[in-house]
Image (tube, rainbow, N blue to C red; front, side, top):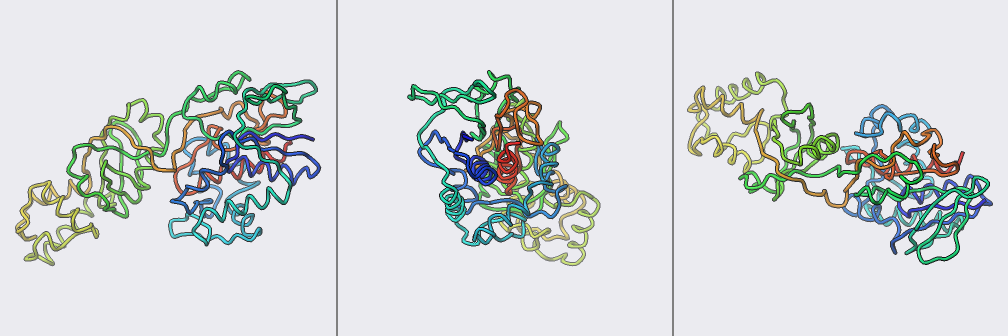
Length: 404
């Protein structure tokens, strides 16, 4: 048997390794159009590689996917995050789970993941061809497949092919698969940060608040978690989650919308009011600048007081009813104008790709072309930040590698 893998990323490698383990006598070739493999693995997680998420149930794992979660959930019973951890550790690569459930190699170096995968490739005698672009792919006689490589006159014939080319930012990059009668979901960005130009909040860049609620006006979109203020606007898990679940809606809004931030991380406004009243009764003569609710960073608290025009020399007892209402409203319902998005460093993810309607999710085989399989981000499956996108690569790569 001859097996072709198109794409030298996480999904392509995992599919190749599992295909070779399932069919030891098969010839397996990985084609990578660039001159480097596993590029996203190398740069992910700030060079540490967030291998998977450590959540403890398949239900919570599948909830990390704005698109494709319900479809991939069944596949997690075959290969999930616990299997991923076991797979790497059984090959001599210890991992650890952070408090936020992100899983990293103990070395805190993505090269450890790359070395582990490369050792498996070498051990299994899988061939890698770099700088090789696939020009076309089409069915050949006897359910086989023909690949024509750019600059190569002779076609390569394969018994099975796995496409793992990653997300395509533009539809043009998916035309070759659309021509083979696969339905394509329009690719658009996911996992991006919000630009809030000309707002004084950006002067607070570098500050973060551990637990906020963020919602988008005019939609049902909302999320919670840490928020980071940047020199262009806002980032952090709360914002990234919102951008992922709202990818299509925000694209339609042309990335121009209003958000409300609840800095208190408390949904019940009465509880926030009561907390502020308790500060007034317990610390009446303290300067407001010296007694910060909800552990807000000092600089941010000063910014908030300035925003609602409370003088820095005011004590809590001098706040008054009007001031109390203004402060409560700012802490629970602060409004910002978002104008544009910024790619979130190396975590850039595409929403869209080959529609799951074109795939038999039990085998990852195409419904349009026999013996053609798919794995990874080329599919219309994308996760929030936190290791979910790599888990999609490992799971779909594992199942595609069965070549059933």
